[in-house]
Image (tube, rainbow, N blue to C red; front, top):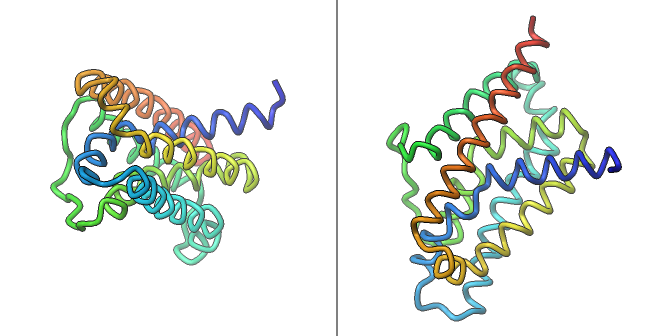
Length: 194
C-alpha cells in the first residue's frame, strides 16, 4: 500500500473513532424527530459543518496557537493523549467525567460541538497535522466529516437496524480503541520529552 494512502487511512479512521458519529445517532434522531428527510439532511450538514469548521481552524492554526501559548508539540501530545484516554475510558465504561452538558437547543449545534468536535477531536487533528503534515490531515478530516455526515443523514435507519444495545456495544469498542490510540500518543510524546 502507498505510504501516503496508509497515513490517510489511519488518520481518517482515528478521526472517525474520535468523532464517534454512532454515539450521536440516538441524540440526533430524537432532536430531528418529525422533520422531513430534506430537513434531516440539512441538520446533518450544519452539524458536520460546525465540526469540520472547528477541525480546520485548529488544523491550519495550530502552529500559531502553540507559538502564542509557548507550548511544545510533545507536551501537547502527552496532554492530548491523557485527554483522549479519559474520553476513551468514558465511552468504554459508559461513565461521565465532569458535569458539563450541552445546553444549546438546535440539534445541529449540539451535535456539531461538543458531541462531534470536542477537545479530543481538536487534539487529534493537531497531532495528525504534526505527524503527517497538512495535506494528509486535511484529506483525513474531510473524509471523516463525510463519513459522519452519512451516519447522521441515515441516523434513523441506523438506529432501527442496529438497535440500542448494538449501538452501545459499538460505542464501547470504539472507546477501547480510542484509549489504545491515546496510550500510543502518550508514549510517543514522552519519548521526545525525555
